[in-house]
Length: 321
Ligand code: TXA
Ligand code: MG
Picture 1 (cartoon, helix red, strand yellow):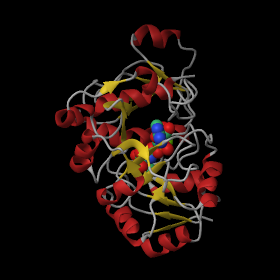
Picture 2: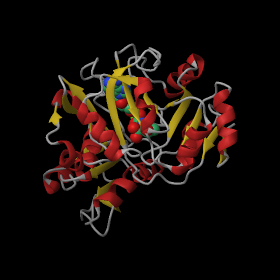
Picture 3: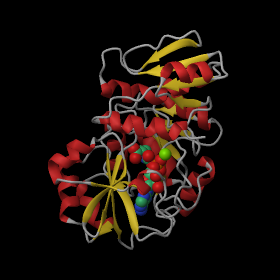
């Protein structure tokens, strides 16, 4: 049975004994294991029901450790690490022999980041090894942004969730890789693209990479981050709602409600029109709507700037049937 705790030493001991422990990060909660424990990493895949072809992110305590785990690091990657770590940025780099193949799904690269959540920072400082951690949700479900959500998902599967309160960002890290030395966006996330481009110049968008979760398996993982209640993005409000066969609909919006007789409840992510607040509220609100008995969720696109691009990416994936 899972326990919530703020005890870093206890969490460290569970991890040393090859257990999976849920950890808070500034983005979303993670399901963590010692990267050198094959059995603990295998448990992550089993508990999440995650395909073996989908590699994990390695969480290290400081940028100083990067060269132990990554090699041939492009200059722009070094600049990004210096500028944004600790923080919600993951870099995909060529891996060293220290990274076991079972972490990186047999790829020659590894995804790596230095998280900024203070409780996780003290856990990493306590440990002798980095932590492999995907988001703490069953595959294809909405990521957990509170210890309570982790508890709901994994009551019987893990012994401990390190309770760091609600995640500050509420969206996963941004992932940047390098192809022929050029920076490429693999996943939109909590660190905005314009913030990154202000530091290293143009980042290339690969649509085919944006639309899948594993560069090795095109299209397979397009649907992601989805609530159980069917979700529809609407462009033409009135027509869409008239045609929809449901009568009991939740509206998920930014700062303004959408009035229609079929819409029974309004869920506004930021009444003040603050996109960061909207990102913080996105997953927790989808999770809440799932506990209520709606036939469907209708969503309008968010302003497509800054973190709004990442919100739109997640609702697009959530809407795919
Ligand atoms: O914010 C986050 O990144 C959270 C917290 C816990 O750190 N973690 C997270 O992990 O979102 P996960 O496993 O849910 O998503 C990691 C993504 C996956 O889409 C995976 O395919 C991709 O990173 N990835 C991992 N290693 C990769 C690699 N070597 N090359 C390309 N993509 C990789
Ligand atoms: Mg995930």
